[in-house]
Length: 341
Image (cartoon, rainbow, N blue to C red; front, side, top):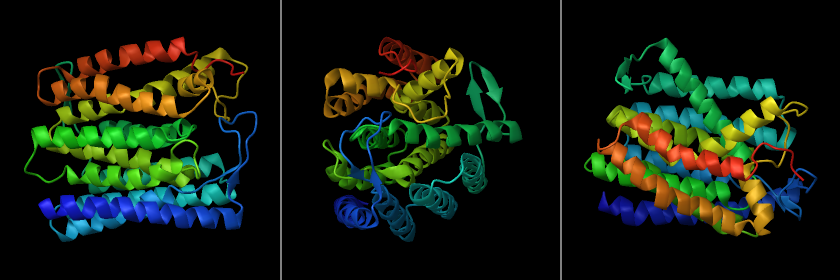
């Protein structure tokens, strides 16, 4: 396992770094460029699709972990099949703009594949009530996975933010595994994903030289969701901890969507720039401080609460409520979901 730490993780960073350079040249050659418009948060044309470097690197690392006996076969099949399919759909959408209904159908198919190989959700206890692992529970979890996939796409709107979120959430997941199941070796899963994203971040940090694209953002959302389900199978409390770690993105995307839905006069599924982080970036006049602030919130505020829940010192649902309350307040303060200017 020490060899994995000192060989696999730096290799993942290097491979993702190199592949992103290759993909940037490909995007420029194929004119896969995001052109700024009235709903954009960037000012200059920028190539997209670099997130495929994360996909290829991480899925390759999963195969290495499996060959060393550090990843169960079912988990390998779940993540390879789901991640590869989601990335393919995102890649096609980046190139050809697939109809929304077909994207959603593909996303739910991917979620069903993952849940079938992960053998669904374990029995959970919520506010003292036992939630059995039945078809209804798994249906809710499928919606959760699809929502994470899509909200990650929504939240990938300024330079570096999706990468910083993925890295800090994954490092939080590493911490949880080391505290709850240190001998399992499963901390290598989020560690490897963080390493792959770190290689991409070199090219994506403000000012970004390439964007992640739907292939990368959707893949990250789905992989983080699957990691949270896997953690729940190790210890049910860890699901709550992962939901806490994902709080910044979940709250911003959810508050923005709900406010747009109930405001009227807006087509709430159209592209826009009314997320809290987008308002914050315009106030700052830069993307970097906002992306770094997201990472800081994760480490300073969400990590401690996630750890308390994982160790049994705090009820999971209560921990989520405590964690999310100031995040909701910040999203409302920043006018998330209101008409942008």
